[in-house]
Image 1 (cartoon, helix red, strand yellow):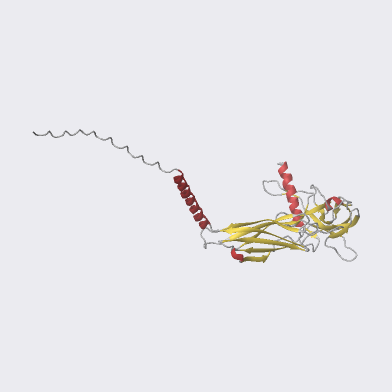
Image 2 (cartoon, rainbow, N blue to C red; image 1 turned 30 degrees about the horizontal axis):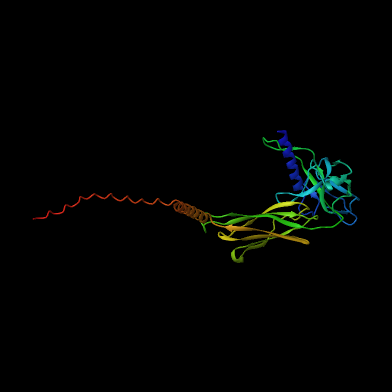
Length: 342
């Protein structure tokens, strides 16, 4: 039971981190009770940290934690690496217990715990030490304020929830920037009516979007389907894709195809593009109604059975009929010659 509790705790904490970080960083990360954001610069307020550094250098900055409740709140501050969620590619960060490899390992807040007074703010300096062997490109992450109190859930199953809010960090390490994207494992699944023409025919197109480069991408995906003789069946730009695809991340996505053909044979092609990169991948499909498929299957089975029987008949011909032996000849008596009369 304790292992289940810990597993659910980590899972829900990760979900809280995901929902606390907005998809578009237009304002401070906020969950209604507290917010985390960069300290304002001399030029203007910053919605997130966007930093640049060369390998072997050190950066210093300040993060602000604001308490919006009427009582003091204590938080644990830590740095975390970012990733794309498998569900929809949203921006999320690692939990405090997970291993950190980028910004999560390089950034250190000046204080690991901070108490923020009611309706007050606390500014905490932090340092990012970029190692000598750091790979060039983007290293996204966040500075997270975690409320370590465990909120008990309702019901018979013991659920523990920890809430956290993080200010995004986009760190670019100097060196070659290599944007690259790939479309992998394209599949088409059909949902056909039993009788052709009676019912809707739909298809589901699934694919994996993979950032194979070292910079954050803002991908666009085009879908195109062609049937027999090159007929265009579908052509559109997809909207349900992540706004940011982080370096090295894979996201499995699906796209519904309504009014798909009930009887056709063709190809589906997905083309993903971002700044300075473009890649395509295809998959073939064969649409066939269930009733037609069953009839064809039955015809094939009957044909196979008849063919096997014919082959067997030719391989084992019937034995020839033996001719009956000729009847033995009946011996004839010698004719007596007539006696001569005197």
